[in-house]
Length: 229
Image (tube, rainbow, N blue to C red; front, side):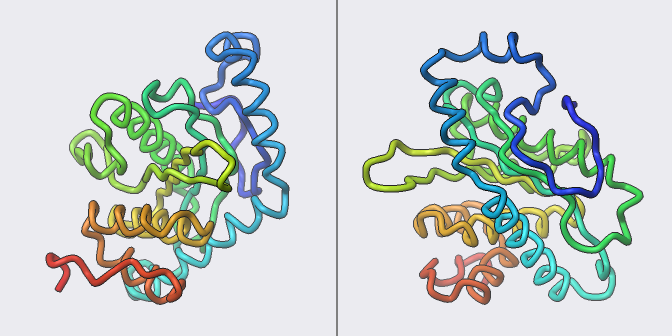
């Protein structure tokens, strides 16, 4: 499931989430693409990675406040990926940062959440290429342990940049809460507000709407979708 150990520490950039050797992984992309990817990934400073994980941690805390005692003290495994080209599926999936966020009362299941958060991201990247999916919840099948909790977001860092595609994935709480954590964390990164609004409308996730509305009130994500009223 990956070429690195699992522990509670926040991870630095690891551009090879599928455990491939460097030579094999590099054979999948052009030298130009690889060079651009290295530049983009090294621009993601340690402080920025910590900020992303802090945003995820805050989202988990807010979700648990809303879920109540049944989820108190819990956390989960968070991952952020850069997706080189949504049309090419998981081959272009590159890990930016990862780590356990939130409480540790469910930490004995961390290995499971580590695996599930990876599965969500790989499945979403695959379905994005095949069907244009933007959320793992669109292909959920709990009989196969396929859950909601990963989202695909299109970002434009600045007006002179090409779009950058990011996949946020989280596992550790009920599926709706996992999904809400990822949407709120994307808002924390100040991605395009239209992308956040689109994801809330697509997923019909009331927890996500509440989190973004409360944590980032400057973001106009519109009224609650009709399903949530």
